[in-house]
Image (cartoon, rainbow, N blue to C red):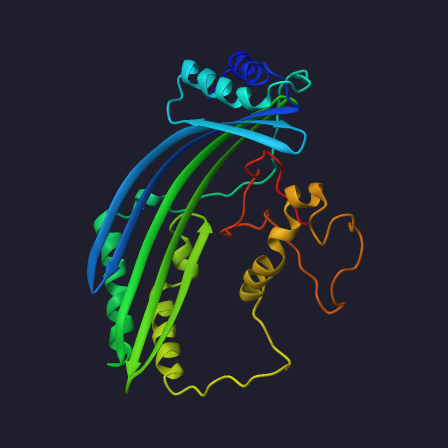
Length: 302
C-alpha cells in the first residue's frame, strides 16, 4: 500500500528521537456480521475499517500511536507522536526493504458473495429451526454469522516488508435447554480461513442438532465428581485450555523480561512425556492459519 520511499520517511520520523526499532502496521478490513436471537435477525452489520499503528521500541519499552487516516501526512503525525515517547534513546539505522514471501496458499473455492446476505440470514433461521425442532425443552437459540477480508501490510526499520490477506468465515451457535428449573447451555463455533465451502465440509445444521441433543441430555446430568481423576480431552478443547494455562507465559514480552516461568528454558522438557503440543499456523483451512503474523513473522509449526 505504501511505496518504500514513503515507508522510509515515516520510519525515519518515528526514530527522530532515537529507538531500537520502528514499525508500521496497516490494515484494511471489510466485514459482514449477522446475529439471530429469539428466532429473529437482530443484527445485520456491514463495515469497512482502515487504519495504521506505529510502534517505536526502546529497551524494554514500546510507544504506540495510531490513525484511521492513511494519508502520508497523517501517518507522519502518528510517527511523531510515537517518537515523542522515545526521546533520548540511541537511534538505529533503517535498512533496505526486502519483501517477504510465503509458500502458503489458502485458496477460496466459494467466495463470500456466492451467497446473498438474505441467503446467509436464511441459514441462521434454519439453524434456529433445527435446534428448536429437536426437543420442546430447547428454550433459546442464538446464531451468528461472520465473514471478513483483512489485508495487512507490515514494515519495520530492520528492512521487513510483509503483506498478507486473510479471508475468515465463521458461524457461532448457542443452545439453551430448560426443564423443571434446570437450565443447561452449550455453544460451538465453526470457522476457518476459507470461503463458504467450509459449510460443505462442516454442516451448520448438523452442528445445531448435535448441540440441541447435548443440551437436552445435560438436563439429566449428575454433578461432576470432585477430586483428582484421569481426563480425556478433545484436541480442540486441549488447545483452549493450553492457551488459558500457558499462553500468556509464552508471550515474547514476558520471556524477554525474564518474568515468565518459561524464561531461559528453551529446549528444556517442561511437561509430561505424554503431552505433545504443536502450534501450527500453516495448516490449510483453519481458523488460526496465516502466512505472516502481525509482526511480519512467517507462520511455522512450533
